[in-house]
Image (cartoon, rainbow, N blue to C red; front, top):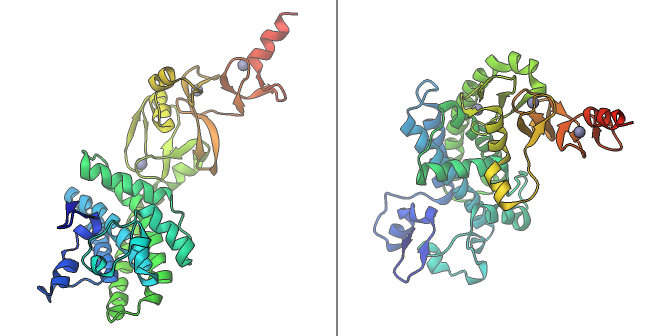
Length: 345
Ligand SMILES: [Zn+2]
Ligand SMILES: [Zn+2]
Ligand SMILES: [Zn+2]
């Protein structure tokens, strides 16, 4: 972010586009990226960097791939908004001013708002949830890369970016190119051909890695959870000492450590802040490692599963608070508690 002359903060994407300002000043003629081509240029760079020469890009390429993919998404979503009405790109459309717009001197709306406007004001064909989990994961990865240290495997980044690329390509085909009436529309079509080819290449590479795992994953699908790094169902809770992802190699520590990481909180926070714990004791192995999350065989519903031994359970026993199968369904009571109760008579 930088301050423009009149104190208006220029949004990140605009700041990366000196072409707009330079062109507005009439200084530079051979540096011109109209919005759609600009977005596609970021996209092409991302796809190329993600693939590398032979599917194994250098770490530095991977970093720029993520930054450029995020920039591509923002630029392309906003270019479609601008085709509809340039003021929609502004965080406050009512304050739209053509001169400032051309100079890039305005706060632009964020990604979530851009997607809401595309859905509500433009009525785009491609269904994109403004809070799409894959876009969110990409934004998080971008933030980590830009502001913190980033540690991930190549395949994790590649696998993470594929769903984002997939939705972006659909969006460009259905909602951008058909509405692009600029003189550069034909160039955009040609560039998309190259991007599609690059994407297929990348997807084949990742699919190939996944195929190699498929047979194993099929056997373990009832206790395989989605990896937080690569986003694939490839973390098998098979009772191994260290929970890890079979695709990208990400390690999560013990079953208990893993369950807490998946829950997004910690034992410490639950104790200090109070409230219900999301991680429960397992009635089979006794470990505090049961968390509700989708598994490969049921990817749209949470399953209460023990990260230490892979057992899944019906619910939490109302009497002992452990994750268990119920012996008395109506009472939500586990077998142990039922036995204890009858032993008293
Ligand atoms: Zn993974
Ligand atoms: Zn257990
Ligand atoms: Zn019980």
